[in-house]
Image (cartoon, rainbow, N blue to C red; front, side, top):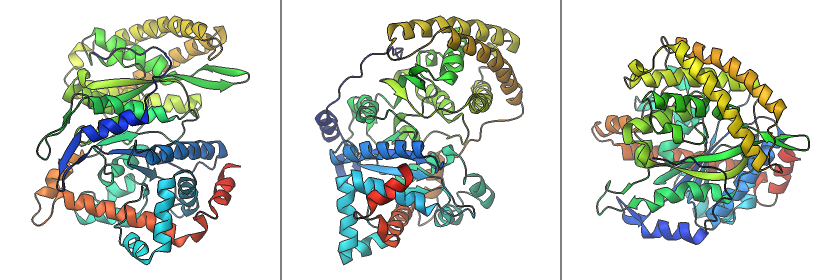
Length: 477
């Protein structure tokens, strides 16, 4: 069973340890044996907010350092921004690539190669150059055409998938090269190198290399971030993480007592968006294109593989750019509806009991947890505040959340999450076509993302090394 992680100073993980684990383990593919590869996927969206842009720049800086040190092999920026006419936001993508050029020596050398050497430019324009930073754009029409051509999606589905974080992450799966995929949000103010190393380390430690293709396995398939979320206030920080603290942790504790999703009650931060997962496990999951994406992934992993193959890594104190209470309540409605959907889908509904009883249990459990959070704050008074004012506000939230949970329960009778096809299903569909295969599709999609990235680099000469600082300043200062 996964152990609940209490705050402790994050363990220092050396670059050489991750490098050694990647080299000691291997994967067998069409080219033979090779070391385990790690991809990082970060969804972004132009919020026209300089605090957000500075946060994105800091994350790209840190990821660039991890590439230069050999910890990760590539970063795919899953970009969802668009102009008023629906076309990709070229200026924001210039900013993203200019930042990567400035902070990643490896990427800077790659860009210098394609702009200075004819063979580099030609290779890039053909989509045959795999940059260490690449941009996948959610509204890229040529990317959509590939899905339409092979009957993976229809026009109506494409229109839906032009919006939503989950869809953007789903598009990213086949274009990454890694055997371990690490997903991170782009609004993490406190982002540190150990986040990525800590998420990937348990999977690498559990890796079992095979002698043939598709024989590699890991005893740990999924690592989820745990942390104590800080919310900046005047003169310091108060305790954040309303959704996990006041809903996720209490509700999974209640469900576990009813023999529903046993073990998920030991997940310290159920709705954290930062995680690492093996490609093999990832391909079996249905991504959700709603706020419930993290919950839906947890429920599926629990059912398919069991809690024993899920690990946690403690980030320590953690900060991101928070939403307001209305945004959190909108999230809660979708998440609670999805939770009841998964309970029903896995035939656990008979154990649930009456909704009124569940809500009484929720009220008591969530309220009891407030003392736990108060003790945490008392233990770290210089790092976080959780006093009577915060407790009173949380009690008001619990009261509102009860009614939202009830609404989610009622919605689950007629609605379900916005679930996308698992990539394993698409693989079977492609492999069944005469003269085609999933591997061919994957190569085609990867080539399209390479071309898209190259076009930005070659079309907007001003983002090259000599002008990158000017582009970054425009978005961050």
